[in-house]
Amino acid sequence: SQKIEQNSEALNIQEGKTATLTCNYTNYSPAYLQWYRQDPGRGPVFLLLIRENEKEKRKERLKVTFDTTLKQSLFHITASQPADSATYLCAQNYGGATNKLIFGTGTLLAVQP
Amino acid sequence: GAVVSQHPSRVICKSGTSVKIECRSLDFQATTMFWYRQFPKQSLMLMATSNEGSKATYEQGVEKDKFLINHASLTLSTLTVTSAHPEDSSFYICSAFLTGLNTEAFFGQGTRLTVV
Image (cartoon, rainbow over all chains, first blue to last red; front, side, top):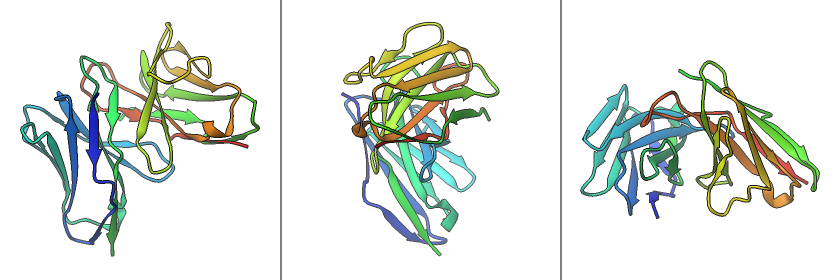
């Protein structure tokens, strides 16, 4: 079955540094990957989508890469701020033409001032 | 962007009672909505796909008689947790998509259910 793994350890970084989060997938090659931000007690909020034929996507301070050989996506936040502290979730579509998503466990990012 | 509204945000109920959670797409129509549950420090687990005008599709291991889903209009899906027990306490979240495939999901605010 499809599986997504994210580093379950919390990531603590200093304000201004670049945060890098990892998402690895197995057993299925998704057509795209998505990244979401989730704050405590809230629903996830969409950040970026990257398709299998795209190597990199950027949006303001965010950057996502997609390596289909390594079966891995990296999510970067440059010039991190305390307001970036949240859980970041990686998601992929279930097999086939569907909008059903399977999520990783998420990585908790804490940016220290 | 599209807005999905979920209500209530928190509910506490007694064991054995039923609880209804509403999920509305406020500024778009959604023929399909998805229901997830999330336990503390765990991932979102897909429970079911809610289809407007037809029966919901449940994921393996999810009891359809326990989690009743109704999608009576293009903007409203409801999840009813029947005969709730403490182990049903969780964070329930719905999502919807704009038309088309391979697009982002819009999530409701989530409902924290506590069964006492």
